[in-house]
Length: 345
Image (cartoon, rainbow, N blue to C red; front, side, top):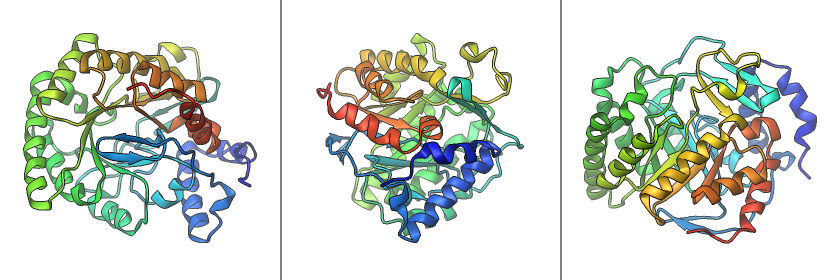
C-alpha cells in the first residue's frame, strides 16, 4: 500500500522548492534501488493507445523538467505513468539561472520557475539513460545552451539530436522555455523554418545510418497568438515533424496577480495555465486536422483537467506541477478517468 502523499507534503513544503525537488528525486531513486518503491508505486492503469508508431500503456505521461538529467527514470515509471519524458538536456553542462529560481503559489496550485535549463550535459544524461531499464516509451527533451548565440541554435539542437537519437523513443525539441534568453524567438516564422529544416535533414541522415526513424515533437508556448499557432502548425506539417507538445509554462500573470511571488520572473505552471493551454491545444487540433499527434500539458491538478485536455484535442497528456501538489495518486486518477472516455481520434 503506497504511503499517502498527504503525510509527506507538509515536510516537502517546509523546504525551499528546489531543495524539496532535489530531495524527492534522490529519495525516489534510493527507494527504487533498495526495493522499497512499494512505498509510492501504483499498478499501471491499462488503457493502451498507439501513437507516433509507439505503444503507450495509458495516456498519462511525465512532462520534461522534473527529471532534467534522467537520473530517476525507473523510479518514476513505478508511479503508473504510460510514458516518461526527461530533460531538457543541453550539449554542455550548465548551472542555469541564479537561485532562488523556483517559487510555490499554493493558493493557486501553481509554480513559477526560472531554472534556465540547468543540467549536467549530454554525457551525464546519456549515462543515466543507458543505465535505466525503462519499459515505457521514453522521450528525450533537447535544448540549446544559454551561451550559444540564438543565430547558432541549430548547431546545439543538431549535436543533441545526434547524441540522444539512438536512445530515444521520441525526441522533443524545446523552443518554448521562457527562461533562456531569446529561445522563444525560435518559434517565429523564419527562425522556426530554419531550425526545423536543419533538424529534419539531420533526422533523415540519422534514419539512414541507424536504421530507425525516431519521431520528432516540438514543444510550444501557451503565449502564442492565433495567427502564430496557425503558422506554427503549417511549419510542423511542412517539415514532417511528427507531433506537438502543448504547452510549456506561461509568462502571463493575470490569474495570480494578487498572490505572493506573482511578480517573480519565469514561467508559470499549474492550475492557472489550464485554460490557456487548452485553447492552444484546441487551435492546433482545428488547424492540424483530426489525426495529427498532440500531447497536452499544463494545469492538470485533478482528473477532470486531464479529461478536458483530451476533449480539447490532445491524444496524450503530461503531468508535472500537479504532482507537486497532489502526489503520485494524481497519475492513476487521471489515467482511470481517461480510460473511461471514448478515444477521440
